[in-house]
Length: 97
Image (tube, rainbow, N blue to C red; front, side, top):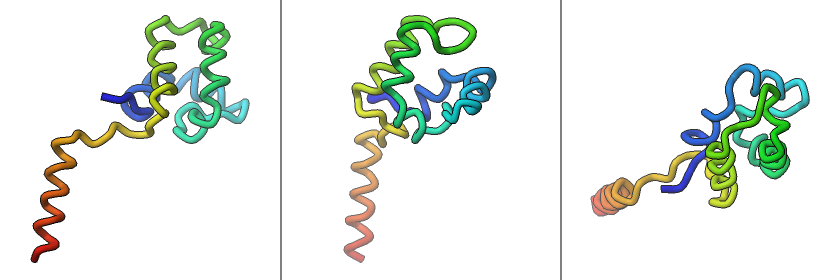
């Protein structure tokens, strides 16, 4: 299953000091839009160890962030195929009357 910001990436950023500290620089790490817009720069800082401010992330977390960017940076987890099929069948049934 593809990674999502809400389920996989946002939890990597602590409210303090990560989110609070970066707001002083105009970047909201709790915001999907901000993280997506600055993903390349964030990744560079994570990779070189200059972010977060109190020490580098473990390689596993950096790899997770990179994977999310390579998968297209989804905001939410995609709806599982089974649930999509059920919803489609319900819509089709409702359309018939």
